[in-house]
Each structure stands twice: as structure tokens, then as C-alpha cells.
Amino acid sequence: MNNPNGNSDAIARRYMDSLVIEQRLLGAEKPDTAVRFLGRDFATPLMGAALSHLQGGMAGYAEGARLAGAATCIGMGGNEELKACLATGAAVMKIVKPYADRAEIFSRLRCAEEGGALAVGMDCSHAIRSESPDFDTVLGSPMKLPAPAELREYIAATRLPFFFKDVLSVRDALTARELGAAGVILGHHHGLMPWAVPPVLLLPELRRAVGEDFLLIADGGIEDGFDAFKALALGADMVCVGRALMQPYAEEGAAGVAKKLREMTAQLASMMYRTGAADVRGIDPGVIHRL
Ligand SMILES: Cc1cc2nc3c(=O)[nH]c(=O)nc-3n(C[C@H](O)[C@H](O)[C@H](O)COP(=O)(O)O)c2cc1C
Image (cartoon, rainbow, N blue to C red):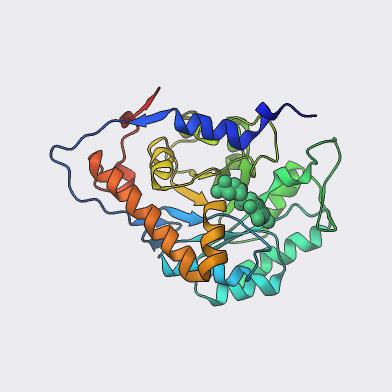
């Protein structure tokens, strides 16, 4: 039996809970959570994570993000589903699986570009099985870890900004930047990798390594607006929310997703107010302390 202490979600939760926030009230102004991201304006730096196969369909999930003025990723799925998500008017970042059949990858990238997606990306971590050194098969589709030269080809195959998802080291972030990616989504894909370093622990070091212009999106274990605040303070440009949106979606559809994203954004704004941050980019990392 595996050691349960290696559960990466639990490790990340413990780290997040060890971070506390100082208050800077005097002179604080009512904050604005609006952000500009990839040339578009959003009401919030929170975005839907790359979920997939949701009961009720992915288009409703995307619509929920749109209603909240948020961007969203979507995960594994066919081109018809991607078109339905885009038809809602949502700003969609399509995360393509690392299919062994490269034609599947090029087809998804083309469909995203033709449909006016916000960006594309790839969750390379899903190429490898958790329990053996073999390539994974996801819902019957064989995966393969792309070689750097192949990744360069995927990036060159689209005019859309490209993000590597499930990045969890300075080394991979720097390689992604060198290959031409616009940014990375930091995370461990809800514990696909055991004993993973918490994404938020890596954020300050990553930000220093990649500079200000390379985009860092925090993903994993963001349960409320206060978690999002910590990730943004420590260097994230945007923050993905996945499982926390699933129950609202199951219960109330797109309206539930929008409601949850708005509630979390209100919590974020409240913490920004208390810490003297007038806007999202003005959140000072110095307000975060470690217990
Ligand atoms: C039901 C479900 C489906 C998911 N499908 C995908 C997927 O197709 N592609 C992907 O990159 N990540 C997928 N993920 C991972 C999420 O994008 C995210 O990385 C992970 O859930 C951690 O974020 P969270 O703690 O906010 O849920 C999925 C997660 C869940 C719960």
C-alpha cells in the first residue's frame, strides 16, 4: 500500500494553510479585480480549470465562466465539444492531451485557432502512468510524452499562445519559455504525481527565474478567494479553479459556476482591500508570512 502522506493534494493543502496574511488597512482603496490577460479584459484573475467529461456538458461550464466575466480552460474532448464551448462566447484555453497519435493534436490545435480560442496548451504530465514507467492510456486513447522538438512543432503549428500545463519546476518553465510557450500552468493534475512540491511553494522562485513577461497560472487546490489571493501574491498572473466549481455546476449549471466564481472573486477583493492592494497586479508578496 502507498504511504498516504504522499498525497500531493494533501501536501499542497498543508502548505497553503501554513501561509498567513498581514493587514494593511490605512490608506487602502476599494480594489478592482479586473485583469488584462492575453489581450482580453476579464472581471477576475480566477479562471475555470481544464476539467472534462462533466455531467451536463463542457459548454455549460464554459458559459458559467463567461457569465462571471472569467476565462476558462477546457480539458480532454473532441472538436465538436470545443466548438460548442467556443459558441458560448467564453474565452477558452483548450488543453490538448499528449496523444500518441499526433494527428489528434494538430486537429485540436487547428480547431481551437479557427474557432477563436483564447489560447491552447498541453498537459504533458498525463503521458506517464502513476504506477509504472509506461505511457498512459486515457479513456482508450494512448498517450506519449512529446520530445522537445515535437513540442516546438506544436507551438509553431498555431498562432494562439501556447501553455504547458502541469509544470512543476523552474527547469521545465525555462524550457517551456525557450521552446516558445507564452506561459505555464503550475500544478500536479490533482495528485497525478505523488509527493509533488506544492505549486504555490514554487511560485516565488519561478517568478524570479522567468521574469515578469512570462505568464504563470496557478492550478490545484484553490478552494476559495483567500487561496487565490495567496497564489496571486506569490507570483501567479491568473489562478485556475477546478473541483471547487464541480458541485455548483452539478447543482445549478452555468449559473452555479458563475455564482461560485463571483463569490470567490468577492473574497479575493475583500482580502485585497485589507492588504492595501488597489488592483490585482498591486498585491504585495510581502503581506504573506509562513507560520
Ligand atoms: C473531473 C476532472 C477532469 C479533468 N480533466 C482534465 C483534462 O482533461 N485535462 C487536464 O489538463 N486536466 C484535467 N483535470 C485536472 C484539472 O485541470 C486540475 O489540474 C486539477 O483538478 C487541479 O485543480 P483543482 O484542485 O482546482 O481541481 C481534470 C480534473 C477533474 C477533477
